[in-house]
Length: 401
Image (cartoon, rainbow, N blue to C red; front, side, top):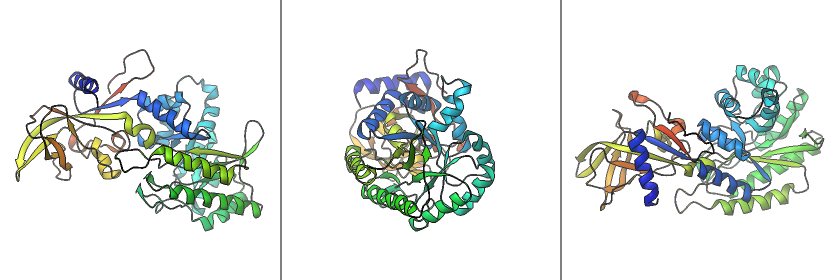
């Protein structure tokens, strides 16, 4: 981080208070551009669960993103915060721009979604029966189970039909009068094993072929009257939190090659669900030291943010966010704790920080935009971090919430 950036963060923290969660929309736009440049034939559906800040949703929409939602709350959030669409056009917007990618949905949610005719995922027969009863007009995407080896967050134990069951489920849907438009998979979050994608693409290709051989129709008719099938390659696109993470450019090259090899002659619409990739590097947290002690010879700093709040990603996302000081000094191994009464609220026992920092000094953590503020709580009555959006493409100053 440059000195100029550090000065800006300290100025904002003084003006707005701490903890302060700064979202840089210029970085989000650059991340989106990189995704489209490296995967030009893949339409991104931003995974709202990664960071549901309304300004991020607006920026993603303005860049041309679609949206992956996993709850009725997220669906309404997307619906509400997209500007510039007259009400009469909202139906078309929802149809083209949203996939409900949670394979298990309450009946009352399905009933609300049916009017929009959006895409929803499923992976079992009981869910098909529920959809038939409460949302027969939606489009269906079958999610299959694929290898998650080497991913930071494994998803295959909870979601996805076994590939051997896929054609039977598609057939059951057809027998119910429901239209299956395609296949989806997810290789696990922060995937550093690109073979997961290769295996998943081959499994999807084989399922499409098996369905075709069995005379089962998959697909939809686009606005130009062409028949197409959806291939949803999910998320998992890696963010370089550390040097050992493989590059997105390397993955994109492999994906482009495999998709062309397997599906080049098919009428396939390829979509993806990037979340972390779009927002992780776009956010920085500024936190204040509210207490200091020496325990067993180690300097301990107590902060006004912790694992029940923005650092919740360390628990739920298995990701570490090293803290840095704005002040210079010889670095020593220090412990950092959050503000709550729970000893579990331990940020790190091995942050490298100067030992001579004082109460009210500021620290910062970078690359903290994904699955952090999204899973924060108000445990012990400590509020979530204030949010400051910068470099938003509007004239008026952005409010701090």
